Image 1 (cartoon, rainbow, N blue to C red):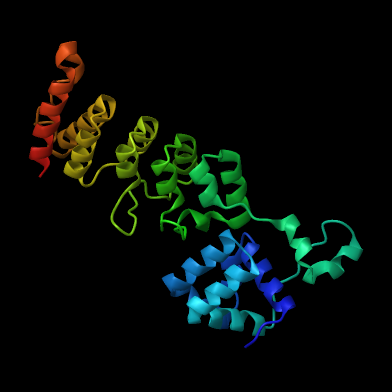
Image 2: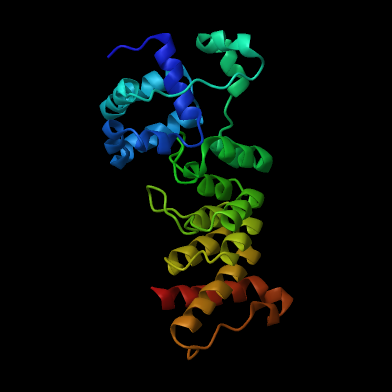
Length: 269
């Protein structure tokens, strides 16, 4: 099925909508494609950067995505045209690309990368909460991973506070968690925030190894305390916690932390 300019614009408007997934799910012939992770990833990509080129690229790269678009356009309820933002005469500009400049979407992934909280919030309103779970096409990371990687505690805090269904220890394709990224980047504020929301309950020895590698005393202390707390809970309080590093002489703080951390790493392996 070949698409004309109007059909392309109809599809682009569909993917711009906040409830795009709901609309697709309401079309019986198209809803079966939502069970494909590949298709949902391409839906997210087009929602993030809706343009004729991105849409065409998605259809070329994913035959199932193209089939879904065919079913949408063949359905009895085609995607509606955008409401006129100016006056009734502007409706005739539906097929004019210049009209779409007024509907330029905000990329939540880019906002997370830049630490722009207002753009991030606006982008979620435009694109829907499903964007919290869709990885970007740059590094294949979710917005929580991106914000943690770049040290933006404001974005991390907003996600975990307002969207509690997001897994604080979610893993990227390579198994990396947001906490691992924050530790590696020495982003103390993000590490504190993630720990406050319960991060780091898995792979304790990996996290401690990563903390030691940074040689950042604050991050090492945070991870020692966090892992010690987890051990105490799991053992019912029968295991003695490491001696607080703060009680060590100032001159020996770094070496004390390394010793305690290494002991804790060994006990968790």
